[in-house]
Amino acid sequence: MAKNYDLKTRQILLSTGEFTTEAVIRLDGMEFYDSAPLGLTVGLTERQSSYIDTEENCLVQINSHPDITKLDQVEFDAFISNRCDSQTSTAFSLAYLRYLAHKAGFGEKQLYQFIAQQNNKEASSPKIICNLLNGGKHSRNALAFCEFMIIPQGKDIACDVRIAAEVYSDLANVITAELGHGHLYTGREGGFSPSISDVKLAISLLDKAIKRRNKGRCLIAIDVAANNFAKTNRMGQFISTMNGRDLTTHELTDYYASLVDTFPVIAYLEDPFHENDIDGWRRMMHQFGQSMLIAADDLVVSTVSRLKELEGCFNACILKVNQAGNISELLRSHEFCVKNGIRTIISQRSGETDSNIITHMAVGLGSEFFKGGAPARERITKYNELIRIDYRRKHSLV
Image (cartoon, rainbow, N blue to C red; front, side):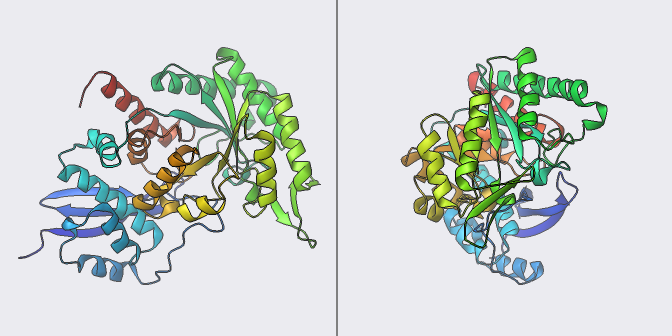
């Protein structure tokens, strides 16, 4: 019997002007497709495919399977991951998730319900972490830290998105008033990227924007991305260079303490140390682990093996599907976090497409947080879908 499906790829635009892979599964006259995001900063242990064949041969091998429609998600991911590069395997994994949901009778708007059912979870809307001011590799300025964000504390997701949009607008006004119109550049994720280098000034600008209309309604979150500025010296010590100063691990910890003392609204630090500076991570957890979220991204790169190896160094974890390489590995990582009391954060990447699948993952898995970039430009695709899902759930709509 002839196969009634075909697997293809095509190149589509990312939000950064680069291109990425979109995987297409054609079946019975229908198309199931999704794409892989792309991050500018990657962890040293982030999944890199050993597959070095051409995309054409990759597709030949994939389409040689006698009948992929009989595979479950885990089986499909295992099959595809050994035959494609990581971007292609991520895209196909997400496209196959959409196919399985359709096969089980779930429409596109119900994808989160399928994810919840398959993983024995109760769907719920996450709190959002919005990137409003960019530094590091995501910007054209000299800020050492990568993302200055807020966690709105509204009554529901629609309220949270509105708060984020208001603070974003007010931040533009604060920057203009204090620095001038020439500082309203934006970074890769849509956050403002003023020409400054002082971390405390960046936090101060964000704090002032919050207080204009939303005092007491936002927490501040910072993605340090320390891999970008921390190096080892000849003695094997980690040194972080910031504003022309070289800080040891102890001095950097003290610097974080001074930031929290100055801005008590800071409730979240992500990748505060280089991923190999394990002493720094443990020191951070000892000092701040009971009072704020210490989130691991580059440290664990969404993989169970790293989560197990480094458990105790963090109390929250960033989960990105293309770090994991496929949805099955991401689900295993999410489950490990849940079972071990680690807070989960489903996250976008700096290079995104118009796919909204990670919003359905966040809701379907009951993830506590969703990190989605600025409430502007292409990032609104994710935030708007979160609002729609929450509305449908509240009004029992399918």
